[in-house]
Image 1 (cartoon, rainbow, N blue to C red):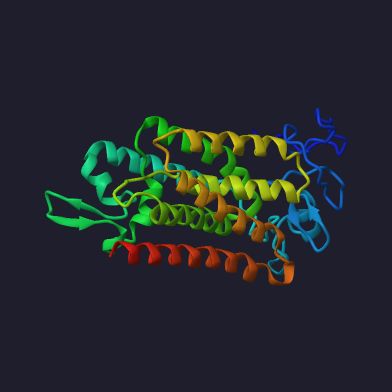
Image 2 (cartoon, one colour):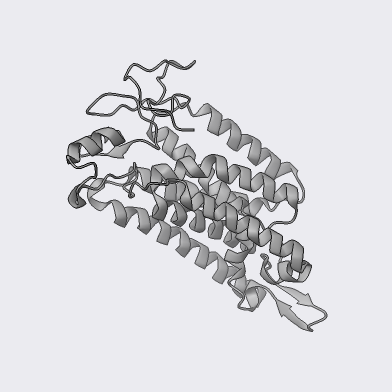
Length: 298
């Protein structure tokens, strides 16, 4: 729940960092360059020098809205929106809706869209999989889940880290990060996993968000220990839980680190070129993996 803006003198947390003036429970090392109130990633708006809070941006415009030539921007240069978590909500809703379709229609629906390299389908008398031209599986597998615990874990992770990250990057950059990370995870699964081993889930995309969150926290000088601990726990689960497609997790994490770094460190004058160029680079790597594996299977 958002708090009413208060005094610049905010109480300090256990780490010694002040809390955001709008979200006191969020410790931050960044302050508005005009009023010097502490601001978290959701509240910071890029200015010509440093970051400003939403109130200072509105006051600076003189109208309550920033002029078209100086629209408020997120840390990564994205547009500041009224609902900074809209894409996260849509993604969660889409995953849940498709999970309900899976439960209603049955296994055949899931088998048509999960990640599969190549396998013979006896009832059809033919092979199916990415190697047979079903490249859409690289994407559709990201929105399917194998059970209630599977989707619950992924959606809770998406909700917890997706909202703040979307607020910091902006909608377009956030959805690009999510999709590119998920495709990178699917591509590495296709390259390294057994050809007839099905896999599905949003885990690759979620691990990409983990990676980008770590990059963002480092950029803002936040305490890295919580996100590193969370990543380590998830990687240990990935390594020792036999039914998990570790390739999707590693591929998604690698894609998220590359794209996340470009999103928050791109120079202002070439920001979009560097950011979306990194997305294209990761997608190119995914295409190379798919082409190589397809050549092996065919």
